[in-house]
Length: 102
Image (cartoon, rainbow, N blue to C red; front, side):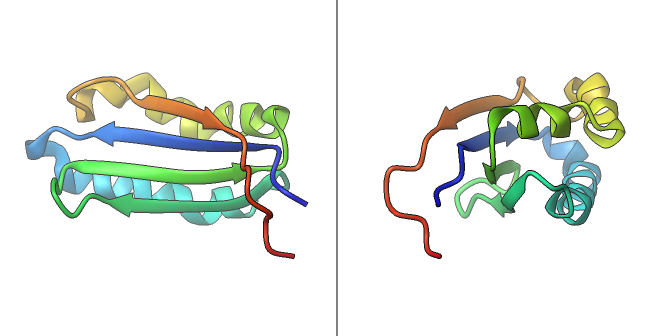
């Protein structure tokens, strides 16, 4: 069964805040993967730009993602994100078309 929602989140960090941003983003991975609606959740760093980070996320459903976005960890981040980012988070919502491996 395919996930109900895929999210690609692109974050462009301020160069002078890279270490803080990286630590913050890495801290999201373990607790997010433990959320019941999370199918998988991966943090990537661009090979071309060390200040660009991408989350590739698959969720059981949009309501599951909405619960995730309201967790204290994410709420705290979104409240101060512009201290760490050059521009706001770009979110691309998608539906997986290929068969998801069983």
